[in-house]
Amino acid sequence: MKKLLKTLVLCGILFPASGIRAQNTYTNPVMDFDMPDPTVICADDGCFYLYATEGHGYSIPIVRSSDLVNWERVGTAFSKETRPTFEPKDGLWAPDINRLKKQYLLYYSMSYWGGSETCGIGVATADSPQGPFKDHGPLFRSNTIGVFNSIDPEFVREKGRNYLFWGSFWGIYAVELTKDGLAVKAGCEPKQIAGKAFEATYIHKRNGYYYLFASIGSCCEGLNSTYTTVVGRSRNLMGPYTDKSGKGMLDNGYEVVIRRSDRFAGPGHNSDIITDKAGDDWLLYHAVDSRDPRGRKLLLDKIEWIDGWPTVRDGHPSDTPQPTPLF
Figure 1 (spheres, rainbow, N blue to C red):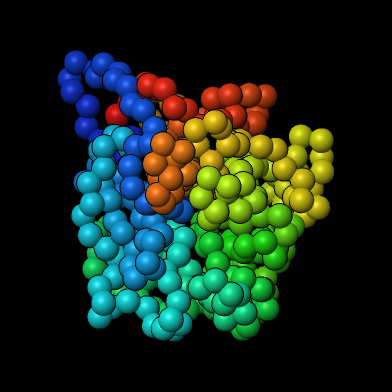
Figure 2: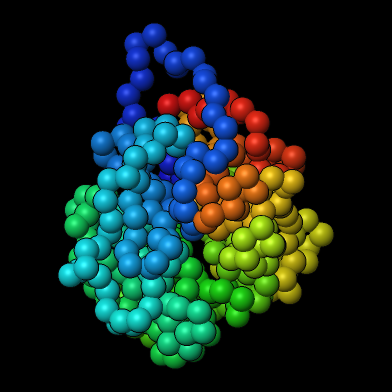
């Protein structure tokens, strides 16, 4: 059975005839400028493409890498002329990149601080990961779907059906989408999946469990940010998701995956899990670096699975040289 969602294994990257290359090291952050809310995909060219929130909210930056460590900027999802307009004064936040058949689907949030009643989630498509992306407008807005603060989309494809998970501190919700992923399926209503402690949802399937990663706390207070990456799991996509003790995420139960360290504050809003040649799982996420607290920098760490639960290192972002992923 195919792995769910966007778990990426090798992604068509070619290896030398002599086998796996020697493993080098990297040190966080892997991108030393503002790149919050990352989402990543591996394209047909064997490269990883990452999309993020841009500080001024004008567009969505696109960067490219062959190893998850060294990144180059290759463009933006939208130009001034093609930028979504359903909330003209809003910024573009927290994108989610996906591949459906031959198209790339980019879900995005449009919001501004204080705009929780009218913010919403839209979708754009492209034939290439670099775009150009064609905007299809909003899937819904908070005041049309009845979910306050409708941001942070996460597309899930399971058993031939498409779903969108989303929400920010007013409950995590899910709804079924049409076959092309461009609209809410007629007659489908949102279902609440988790409580009001969470935002920035990502779901990963492993060994018969669905793992719901999310972030709690404050994302955007610089070194005072309390953002923390957490997780719950379920045997079913629609839950119930629980922590180790059985407390439900609907009741705000969770297990901590990554918490702040002496150097990095507010580690959260993780990307998709990427699996390398060695079978190791890797996670990209953002945090504020006390050595240079301007913006939220991009970090990379390996996930360790202990008794069926994910953690990163000792539960904190790494700040010493680490072995690089093997591609």
